[in-house]
Image (cartoon, rainbow, N blue to C red; front, side):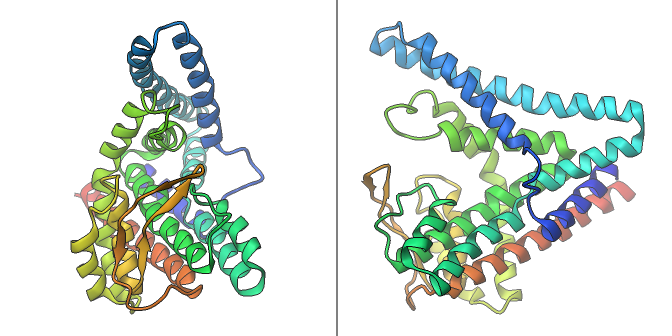
Length: 325
């Protein structure tokens, strides 16, 4: 019950206060560990021929994954153990604060709202800059429609990656399992690119991130479907688009929530985009009953919050019932 209480309080703190930017975020420490190991692996592999180098980088990716996961999960386990020795309330407070830091609903909604505000009260150039802070694609040439779609897609995809998935892991195993998920997800975001540099080093981290997100992404999509009905959005179309487009992505997971969001808003998302100066073909998701509008960013944020609330209510309530039996 202690981890459940810590998770619930952390969830509420995130919604009330958002990310505590005044404090160094633990995920940044994970990122620094990844960067350090990545440099060592590349340096070690430099001396090999091209063919051997590829194999060594592939093995290095596995070493990277194991090393990052062990440190990222083991450290909070050790600190919680030591905190428990000092006092149970101290350990509970520490775990609660970590749960608060590992959830990102308020931060995601806040950053996407900045894009909305720049579109409605600022300039297109300012909106492009704002959306560049939350997406991985090139934004310099995006028109207003492109900026809106990029912001909505990010909110939709990160409803799973940034909120529901970490919430599921926190509910299952408290802060240590939450850090385990964040380590896996951070590795994918840093080295999981299919470009020349990371094709081999990032292959194992990217595949294992797909594995870890397989169930959470589908849970997120189902709960988002329910949320679309409760918010008065087009739930029927959300279900229709979900069945039609949930596999239209290079990732087996990303289109799960994107398809629900596109259907709920009656717009079309995805399509070709530029990454690091190179155009990448992507299938479109959704049915374009209307053109995207700035207000869709706000609607996506509401869908994010409702999905997060229902996830906590359903899965947290389920865990409470099991613990009380």
